[in-house]
Image 1 (cartoon, helix red, strand yellow):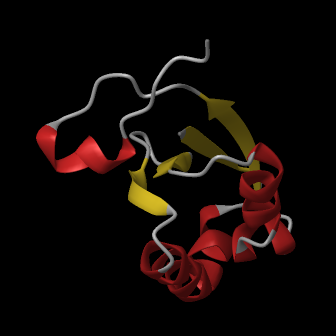
Image 2: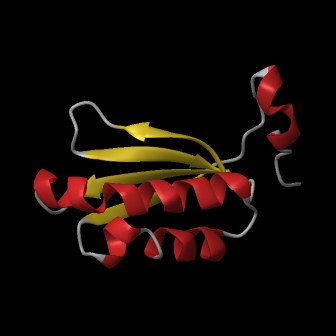
Image 3: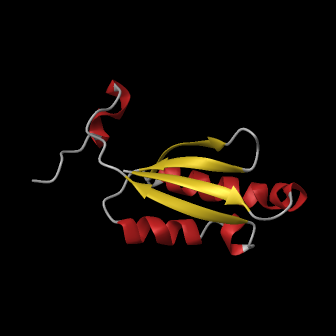
Length: 99
């Protein structure tokens, strides 16, 4: 599983202008089953996405396709972790530690 932390690198006026495209991008990845949760950071200087996937390279490619990234308005930090404990609603995403 992955935590995708994005930090805005452009002004909020430009972020807001690209926001509808970003929301469509989010919906696409929710529909594909890759994104599990997302939202703005407080204070509003970026956002966080919880993503499922076994391939870090594929997750990093997804972050590069974010309209915020394409427009040069955000940078991502990708943190991979092994979700060995989950809430019941996320049981399907529970992982085993590598042997």
